[in-house]
Image (cartoon, rainbow, N blue to C red; front, side, top):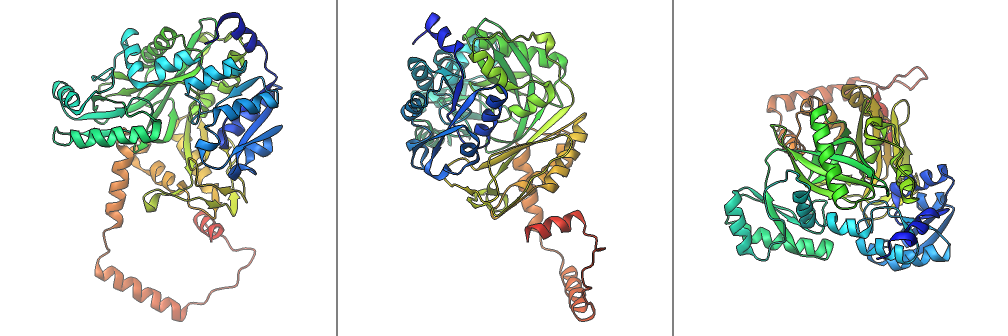
Length: 509
């Protein structure tokens, strides 16, 4: 791997950035580059030829067919494109090649500035098992369990017996809920081990899994860090990511309702210790589980920019992508820990093309109509437009809607207002799900944990399956029958007033 003077020379030159990604994150990075006076290159697959990030960039290059393995995961083609168009740097965004240490090394070998951590740091912290070893060296509290991959089912059974059930099997090479299985007894462990290993192999190319104690009803809290090439590293507060479905985040907030200054400081200092011990540079996120007694345990580190970075930007007033660029160019942070202050509250909803009422089945297709929210305290990072066809080939996230206000309660109300303004026609989305969550008393009082959303969905399914009493059905039928005979519909006039609900439903008709 190249280091020293050559790496420094590469870092000092940055005039054109290739964004090795798509969707809203590619647009987010293009905008930051434009603000910093940097030219941009977009890459695209065949189905993304008319995608917003392609239209927004200064130049664009085709990578290949729709499947990610033939386009956005082809690091060789991405590097070749950067050379042809004389880009100086590559920003990977998140997902795809963003945590691929070999790709980071290849960029450096091609004298391209990789806007992210060095491959060595990715290797030390990107693997979940190696990260647990690094956490031990950094004297961080972590969930009890193995620090290496399991060699066999017999080893898994032995470790589980030692630490006690329930336990969790996890893929060592990835995240996002892939290769994860909760196990409550020794009887279920062999089949869970086989299923987790198989899914890990399919998702990440490695069947390695490890085992840890399952912390019941924890909160998922993560710390944002940023480190420069001069040994400076600070934390930028925390994000609450407990509203999840199948280990995938749905809503994120900053700050967390349960984190006070002391807990924030202790978690933040632990995250910084871990980053410094691994020689980490650029933006990264250290994830923790917090139990009911507010004890925190290291979970993993994401060696890239996070999907939910906007909520941190809103409460700190800092631009994380700008900081990433500056750090990659070799500039010192220019910030100390005492310069970081959290103000107000921000909430992010991930808008997906999926149908929550049909087991969250993906809903690709043509967007026929798009009305987007705006107004005070609203930020929308979107990757679509009316007339754009959402492909089936990638993650179905369309946009990230963020609401900011002085207090958590005000941010919730502002988000509800923004959701009322949001209309996406032609496909199914999860917008209505967010209204259910934000109106739920448990969420509004911050009585949440990583199992909160699953419980809410089960409760709502149970309530919807209860049939009304026969007398209510008969009464409703009689009223409707009478209305059809006696009522007449007045002609619409300019003075007609619609409720907001009627307006929304009318727009969606």
